[in-house]
Image (cartoon, rainbow over all chains, first blue to last red; front, top):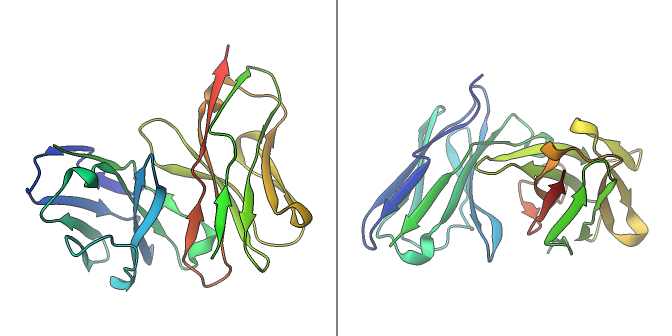
Length: 114
Length: 114
């Protein structure tokens, strides 16, 4: 298995632009998570899905952030409009049935908003 | 609310020396505890986990961790560090089966001197 695949690896954009981050989870995993990592706040859970349905989005910082999972093999995290304080590494992770068994992380997307 | 504290931001050890990374958690009941490792430019990888039973847990890459309820600690240890162990290490806590809220510590960066 190729693992969790995220794209792009790096994204540099200007303030106000729309940013879309993409994730392909491991086949057969029912849970998908989006995390954000910054020096100040560490790793934060933004949102997670179960069987393509958003379950908890309480970690999404603002309405500028949205996430979708149109099918079991694809998810997006969108920021519109982007701001410099959104600069961070965004990780996608997937898990088989029971979340607290094991998380498999992607390599992350390094986002820089200028 | 659950929380995790990793008191050491950065630790440097010589190759072949022993290692102990500290982790303290705050949670009212018996927690589920994890240690993850993050190599530069990569996502997190699970080293080991504690759910119940034997308080000394063995993980991958020769790591082990000991759960001490009286001290609210879950310290990670390795008897002899290899240069390839240089990475960032994250302790995490989950409130239990069926919970999907994994709270991470801020991480400890490990440097290894040849």
